[in-house]
Image (cartoon, rainbow, N blue to C red; front, top):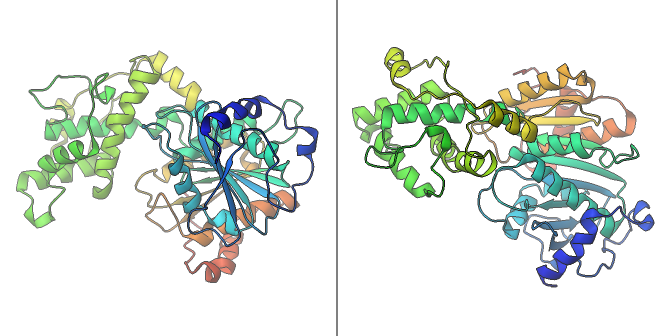
Length: 443
């Protein structure tokens, strides 16, 4: 395989260029990329893809890594994938292979697939949206303009894809770069609304546990996540949580104080026991990145007027919890980067587990309201499933969502939840997994 330095040099041309005239034609019947100096190298596909699929991997001039998969029976359609996170570590090419493997259903449905890391770790929705559109252009340069291009965002990638759809749906001449959008388990409330509960978690956790930070450690406002330059591993954080709540022990082996602490924290913040460490980790390391690296040390979070409830002594909690007020400049900067306008111009379908423990289903309700305020509800169809999962829902549900979106694009007829559920039932046997749509649910 060619070296990544050469790939990046070539991608500097691809990332900023309009696809040549030859790339505007129908995709080739043989799934082989055009010859481009320093182009991506062919790689062994991850497991789970259909037989005969060919894969390539490469890097962009901006520093992201991408994977491409093209099935032997390529229909001429393309799914451009925006992954979740944000991942705070440096980009790793194998992470994208994991995304491809998780959403192999798109390739089994006959679509080519391209997805990338983002150019750096950490927060940045506009950055990630640009990196997502860059790999769309790379695919078009290599394989020609596909018959159809679908933008897919998963988890935080749902925020990224929704932002990319607002920024890059159309080119300068009004032509479509994408034909439709699919958002799965999406963080769709926007940056200024999606993370406030984790700021609440930091404050409530500290009221009961007093160990993040400990009394003998450097003190800092909890909205910072961690002070600039400080480090805390997931294992270190887990140890502190276990010390306070007994989370590492069966319920019967927790002390009365640990059991009380855990019960109060979960009840007040409204999260599940199994998600406590994950949410607290985001409220630690991701908050540090957001505040220290992206917002100039300013605070975007506010609990100055929050009335906490659900504990065994709400009066004591509200009197003793740490309070903080948001900096308007930080809120404005975060909103510019990550909030959504709802001004969609493409058919958009979403799916969300009703009991998603990570990106709460209320985020889909927030997006519905955002789109409605923009007067674009006719371009949004939302579906919900009876699942308590986030990273991966039942496979035929994704296939059904793709098929519904494809039909909507082809016919102009907007699908409904019952129609998507029927499409799923038709595919359930082939995938060996059930359909769990609840067509009457509305968050």
